[in-house]
Image (cartoon, rainbow, N blue to C red; front, side):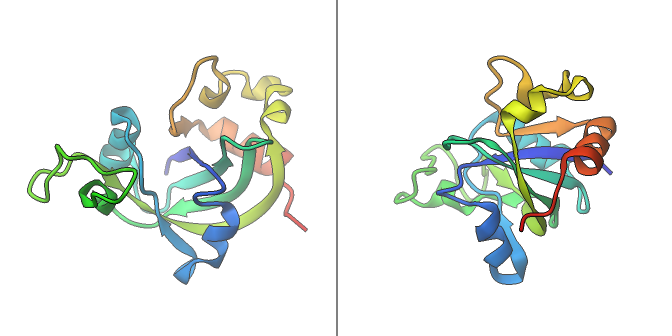
Length: 156
């Protein structure tokens, strides 16, 4: 089992959207970075833990817990000319972009980015690295345990 931090802009897909979705599951659409795509395509497995991170918002941070709930499959937004994620170079026969589904596990009291920076146990966490813009990053077992045991509080 592996662990991941997956960023989403809350106005596009928030932890509440995930909690209220059919079967509490959403496809992780719109990833257009090859390294993040490769994580989903080549490494993620059903059951992997997910730190659901709200980004590009007034207070970014970990908003909840989710789990990978599907094997990878082509992201349909790459084929839709009306989608902001359309990719004219991608085809049904040779899709460039893959996704996985994630299922809701728990909404948390937001763990702000600033709070993550306060803990030595998280000093090497990739989301904290200067210049990191990846929407999906691996999380170590130790980081996962520290966050879920020490920092995670259920939202009220």
